[in-house]
View 1: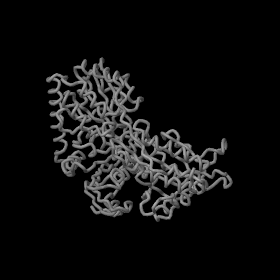
View 2 (view 1 turned 30 degrees about the horizontal axis):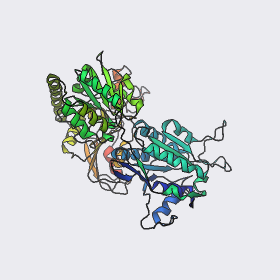
View 3 (view 1 turned 90 degrees about the vertical axis):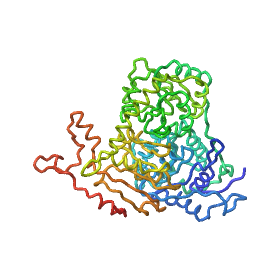
View 4 (view 1 turned 120 degrees about the horizontal axis):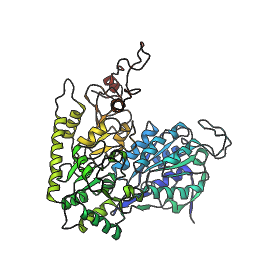
Amino acid sequence: MPTIRLTVGQAVVKFLANQFSERDGIEQRLIAGMYGIFGHGNVAGIGQALLQDELGAAPLLEGEDADTVERLPYYLIRNEQGGVNAAAAYAKAKNRLQTMAVTTSIGPGATNMITGAALATTNRVPVLLFPSDIFVTRFPDPVLQQLEDPRSLDISVNDAFKPVSRYWDRINRPEQLIPSLLAGMRVLADPAETGAVTICLPQDVQAEAYDFPVELFRRRVWHVARPVPEPAALARAVAAIKAAKRPLVVSGGGTIYAGASEELRAFASATGIPVADTQAGKGAINFDHPSAVGGVGSTGNTAANTLAREADLVIGIGTRYSDFTTASHTIFANADVRFVNVNVLPFDAAKHSAEMVVADAREALVALTAALEGWSTEPAYQQRAIDLDAAWQEVVDECYHRDHQPLPAQTEVFGALNELMGERDVVINAAGSMPGDLQCLWRATTPEQYHLEYAFSCMGTRSRRRWGSRWPSVTAPRWWPSWVTAPIRCCRWRSPPWSPRGIKVIIVLLQNHGYASIGALSESRGSQRFGTKYRMRNDSTGRLDGGLIPFDLAANAASWGRTC
């Protein structure tokens, strides 16, 4: 078998550059590039390999041309967790058909990625992580940034990735890289079992040379499946729908990832079934579609939630039914309510003792629409959904145009953004009170316009996800509400210090003095905002109940090169 002598770092880079995904006949790079911060463990391993690749100095396979060989672009990041968040955002924007790899040093560099890994796995989006690890030889022991465990010499901080990764491995010998990389790609390209793939690379192994089989580096296409509904499962779902008087669709992120927006709209138009959406699913059906009723659940609106309480059948499409979607299992209040769940993951399809349709959302919607031809909900029920939504739209208009003085209210800012943004502009947010307002008020017209991370509700994701969601393929301005802010300002800059690409962004800062969302929850439950006020310590009481912390966020923004 032909071989080529490469270091493990070189092998990783060369392998990733030749991985592609395919769905519906369209092929694209599976790993679009690598984010990285170099330090102890990877600066002389993957770091050197990426440099050689960029300079065209990496070893070539027989017959390869240095001018046309596939290369793996490297992008500088400033924070390890931010790199993972950006990779997850990029994967989400690419409907999980592409993602980014992230490499970090050992120790704090590696553990900084753990929260990002949990975010990706919770959100069911693929990211590829290469944290450096301790020396396999154990000769330099303990090394800088090594956590010693007296119970075993085979444990490092990277073992903490295991519960938050969909796939985890540690490469102790170069040849172990071969099956591990292939297994990792399988998970990344699996629409059901995807999430964080973590492959730990000990720092001495990264630089170790090995005769790798040339076959490992051939152009490899990973075909992303569209599983079709099993006929018997489809028949059970159709029977349940036809027997329902007040059915309701709850559309989640899986609808968007499957590229099933048109099919969802066609299904709703044909059947007259109202469609509510989750945080991840907003925009799959345009807000002004006759069957669209908006966000459902704890942060949902009165129209969707009224229909949810009355529904005798809930049709979940691509949703995992988080606690916010179900209002902690209270929103679907009809004593006789049943569920039909369409999902590529059986674990999610089985929730709520549902009739399971384990299938791709697009394929299932096409099949359901055909099987239900000639059937629709009663006109009176369709009109009720239209009337409820119309009443809610009046509330949205009021929230968007309150003329609050002296500064506009948060909802007015959202209204201005909503009316200003184009179909390809993207609103991004996570955590705090804003996701609630956005979920019930935002009028999304396209699947790509609304990008919220609320599965892990991870604060700090906005600043990284805003460029990961479109970067490196931004073609239009993007808008991002931020959670701690100064008097309402619109801040613009063309070359922020963390963006070598000079992507134009427009950031909106809203002054809520911090802890506004969780503080309100604390107060409503009798905890008097304890520990949830952003206040100075009061010398007379010794408690954090003094004046507001004197933030000048306009000056802070200016320190980042932003003009306000």
